Length: 455
Image (cartoon, rainbow, N blue to C red; front, side, top):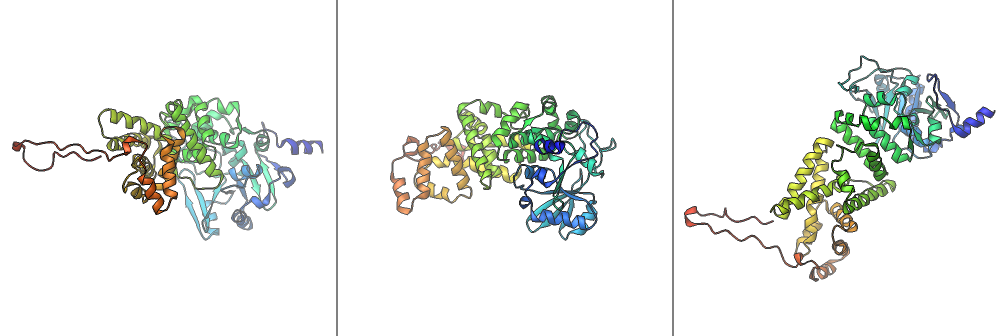
């Protein structure tokens, strides 16, 4: 009775011996609210169980349920093979090269079903640094638990019996708010260096403390991330930045020494008063939208993070004699080319970033038909929000943002009245002068090739 009471208060203890047997937690002990479980997730587990297979909710879904949070995604683990799972559902698709999984679809709802993974073998293909390239070894449930990354992600919940199986003391770590990797940290990071980024994301998102043994090797092993395909790094960075704790994640990245190479020059930006304030405002805005369940544009997010790198190069090109608009495009090219190599930025995201940056000089043209044309831009709202961030950070005069807010909210006569007011900036008082035509000598031939292009 006393042991049961202690277990209910503290959760399962960290196991140091046999990890082939799980501690079984009842509904009264784990206190998961069944109402937080997706009906489709229950449908998948029950279908598999009725077919004679084991099936559990696993990973982040169980972790969130134990924390009293409704999971965004539900993953299922089973002893059925991918082919057996596929045969049980009308819309099921086997995907993956490194490890095969099944996507089961119910309308727009996607559930990921994985077969219990077995102990990794030495025969599994690896690169020269020890990263596992492909491993389709299936196994028992306790082996699957051992293969998972953190103790808090290695628990299994059965909706039918409302029990939780805990193999590695995950419940105790949840109660103690500790993030602990399963196994030898160095070996686990070498198998998959992305786990170092996941450590940062979970610690920041959950406000957990990283176990010292889990944290210790990260700074030394951080360069291994350079061996991971850029697309995987980008996916993990996107999860990190859209976790609802983006600022905390970036701070944790710096603390653990993982930021180098992911967002070059970010440290320099954060050391500059205007740059730091701008990035903090952008990330705080993103976090707030995530918490409110509003959509977040990856293009806007990366445009914000990299803006001060663009700004620095933009000023440098202008100082070298380039005109403002061409200088901005050259600066954007430089930054995007660097980041594409590091983060595999998708073409759509890079295009959105360019549009947001290119709109900024146009906001300063508040005369004639220019404002009306800008209102028709497909990225107008994103560009306007970006402008407000620049105003709030002190980079530009807040009056510009206030004028555009008023212009967007005004009716026809109201907009005309705003345009009739004399701009506070002398640069906006009159259209920019075009460069004078160059006089060509008669012997040089005719034509208009000597006319300078307008900005």
